[in-house]
Length: 271
Ligand code: ADP
Image 1 (spheres, rainbow, N blue to C red):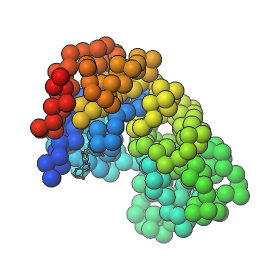
Image 2 (cartoon, rainbow, N blue to C red; image 1 turned 30 degrees about the horizontal axis):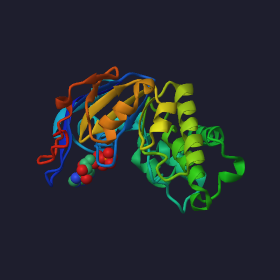
Image 3 (cartoon, rainbow, N blue to C red; image 1 turned 60 degrees about the vertical axis):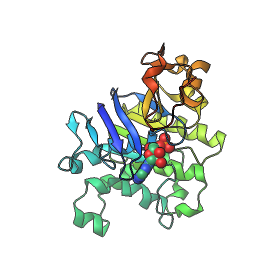
Image 4 (cartoon, helix red, strand yellow; image 1 turned 90 degrees about the vertical axis):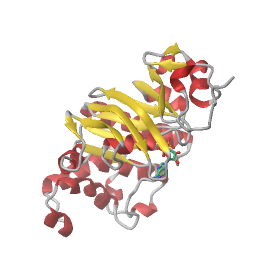
């Protein structure tokens, strides 16, 4: 359902963020992308909704290649959840969740804020399903806790019942318990609807608990692709520390040369 075909990204300043990553995420999978800061996680996610255009390779969502002329059609099919929530703080919870319907509305209705009754009903349902109550509907988002704000972000992402949701470090600014609650909620919402989720995380323990599959990046390359149960200390070293070995799809240990760093001049694998 989501297909990255040999995608590479070199930013204008010469930074090589991703180098030839291929990845197929089947429908309904909760796929977590792990990796330390700068590994290329955001770049990969942003390619999936056309915010970053790969300098090489292609991305397809439901068989449709992401390109300038297909974006308007694809965007409403992709929900996005952000690290900093990206909500309008001065607006109410209801207004923020309703904003999730904007990509599918004609511009004039969107500009006038003319949401259909169906959209209003859906927003109320979602607000309830993420654990907020009626009294929150008209509350400004700025008056909510971080965890509650991310619940609003999740409700907004599901407004158009998208088959794909991208979550870019959705719990990075939340405390451990709230992070756990928010990811449980995200997974439940996704499972109930059969939604595919590509979610980047920092926290390995959360990845192991919630992911169907973990894909780990290092220096813009996939160094692990497998089940959470296969993410052992050796894999940890390959992803975060000095890498004695890389790990191939299925969780098998492979030869070190497959993770040669992309950054020129950095020979981390030199023994
Ligand atoms: P992560 O999400 O894993 O922290 P990113 O995808 O944000 O990684 O970044 C990967 C690399 O690309 C980093 O070296 C980062 O500094 C660089 N990068 C990200 N965005 C840009 C940009 N707009 N211009 C130049 N370099 C960028």
